[in-house]
Image (tube, rainbow, N blue to C red; front, top):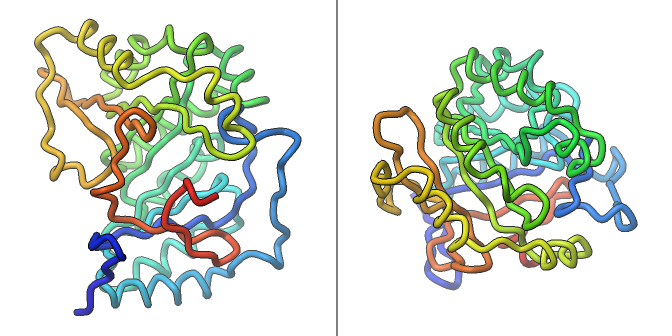
Length: 279
């Protein structure tokens, strides 16, 4: 089989597919209210076009396809796309990244359609704060979505929290305990100064070093380092002793992971992007 090797001699085996750039949340670190330009329906790829592109990538060694957005669950009949991708022989891993607001009613159907695991964004466990960060999000619906994903059998489920100084950095320990209580993995993410929302990200930057200090203080002598080859991703992580959970960091600013990157991104419009930093 042919392999997809980029100019930096990195073997690409992972395709992230944005099925829409629309989102029902307007998180401060992601979307600037004054610069939102969602595409129209006739500008985005059809499911048939996405499946055709994924099949071509599979012939070049891609085995993992993640459905992302925007918020992918806003796209009508996302189940049919999952079924199409599941029919491609070489594709053996189809996870989804979601804010879980719409997940609860269809989690079991997604699992049956081949969505085997999920990354779920949750930046606060305080209802009012969560609503402020997301500009209108509903924490109860997100937690219902998380619990429905657990019930469906999706595994692993990873929670992603973007840590912002002076905004939610006081919740790191509570989020770890929340993940442990539900036997989930948790990853803390540095804000990335990208695009118009990046100005706010710089102001609230909370470094990986500070995050790790908090993790180690909260879980003394309970962390077992996960070797980087086991994660096949940007997160640096630890198993938490005597639990079913892991904790990790993603630090594109303090400690970038470019040299080991194995992914490319397909936008909703059909553009190929090597890195979020290209935007």
